[in-house]
Length: 258
Image (cartoon, rainbow, N blue to C red; front, top):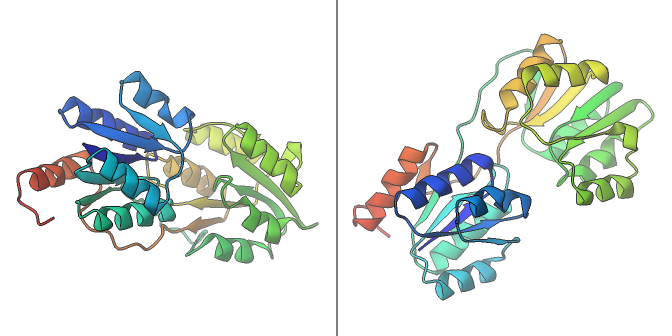
């Protein structure tokens, strides 16, 4: 059986494909909503974040033979946990990550971290649209809740996110609670509606709809701060379903060292 970290919509599509190809797997997801597509295809899953010890115990209990890490490109801790657990249990680790996108424009500034993005943006005067999710919201409110800045936060419409916004002092009028993917025209309309003068986003890839965000902002002449993906050195790395299947087949038939 395969332990499969299903962190994105395309990851869950990969899980479905692998099951259809005859690979038994147990998927882990962070939220119940993320599990809906897995449940619809009768893929066993469990909800909740796992520590290294938790993951090792699960691997041993279920006699897992491989870990496929298809967590979100920015879920750095999840990847480190999966690599450590696989190594400790002496089973193969495979990383699937959606391909990155490259954008070239004088309006784009690339940074290495959320905090670097927040510090860079704090001298801005105007309306900043934040599309990096709720997990690192505290970093941005720390630097950007200023009189000269209106911080518009776009995130998933769940109770936890709304409670977090309330706790951090973000006003209801400054919250866009919608679930994507968003079209280019909707991104453009939201930027125009809120008179956005700076966009902060992540390089989450084409499936993450970064194309539509970036294109809309650049067409409107809006500067963009883009946070690069974490620099992690992965083993057995693939950016397509075919590459993952080949790596998996190689381990099963002994073509790769464990």
